[in-house]
Amino acid sequence: MLEMRHLVSGAAGFIGSHLCDRLLADGGEVVALDNLITGSERNIEHLSGKPKFTYRKFDVTKPIEEGGKFDQVWHLASLASPKFYLAYPIETLESGSTATRNMLEIARRDGARFLITSTSECYGDPLEHPQVETYWGNVNPVGLRSCYDESKRYAEALTMAYHRTHGVRTNIARIFNTYGPRMALDDGRVVPAFMDQALRGQPLTVFGDGLQTRSFCYVSDMVEGLVRLANSEERFPVNLGNPVELTMLEFAERISRLVGIKGQIVHQPLPSDDPKRRQPDIAKAKKVLGWEPKVALEDGLRETVAYFKTRLTTA
Image 1 (cartoon, helix red, strand yellow):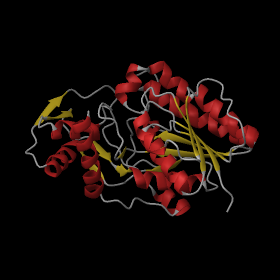
Image 2 (cartoon, one colour; image 1 turned 180 degrees about the horizontal axis):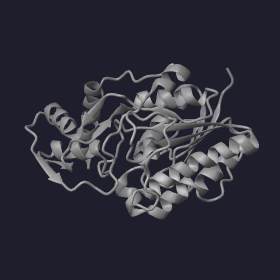
Image 3 (cartoon, rainbow, N blue to C red; image 1 turned 90 degrees about the horizontal axis):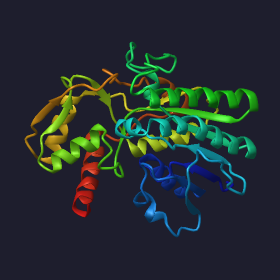
C-alpha cells in the first residue's frame, strides 16, 4: 500500500486533531494547517516531533503554497460553534468561501482527493424530520446564524462546481453534533457547556423549554465515517451523525447523572433561528460506506467527562 500524503486544514481543532491521529496511525504523512482562531496547539502537541507530521500556523484564506504532491486534501477549517461564528461572522464566511477554494485549488493542482466537512446546519430549522440528504433545508439567509449556514452551503456548491468543471474527486460530509475529548471548554456548544457547569457544581443552562432535540456522535465514530467517505466514490453530500435523538432536558439529566450531581436547570431565551429538531437520516452512509456509529452515548460521555476533569484541574 502506497503511503498517502495528506493536507489538513483546521488540524488543531477538535475533529481535525483526531483526524490527524487517524491518518498517521494509518501510515500516512500529514501536513497540518491551522490559524488557531478556535483551534489549540494543545490538541496536537502529542504529535510534535513525529517524523511524518508537520504543523504550520497558517490562515487558509490566504494563498496556500505548500510544496510537494498531496494525495488527499481535507478541509476542516471552520468556526463551528455559535459563540465563535457570531463573534467572527466575516471570518466564518471566508472559511467557507475563499478558504474552500484555496484548498480545492491544491486538490486540483495535485489531482488529489478532496473532502470538506459541511454541516447539518445546511438544513437550517428543518421542516422535514429526520433530515435526509435530498432535503434542501429551511435556512434564513440574513439571520444571525446565516454566516455559518450559508458559508457551508456555498462551500458545498463550490465543491460540486470543482468536481463538475475540473473533475476533482470530491466528497462532502454533512456532520451532525459531534463530541469527545479535545472540545474546548469555552466552545459554547451544549456538551462542553453542560459538562463545565456540572463539574463546577453549577446549574445547567437550557435554552427555551429544553424540548428541542439533538443527536450526538462520538468523535472516533465521526473520524471513521470521514475516512470511509474520503475513500468512496460518492460525490454528493452524506450525513454523518448518530440518529439517537434526545431533548436538551434529557441530555442535561444524563450529564448530571454521569457527573454524580443533582442537576439544577436554569432556562434562558432560545437563540434566534435555533433549530427545534436535529436528527440525521444515515441510511445513505450505511448503504454507501457501510458506516454507522458504534460508541454508545454513555461510554462516549464517560470518556469526555474524564477529559474535562483533567482540563479543569490544569486550567
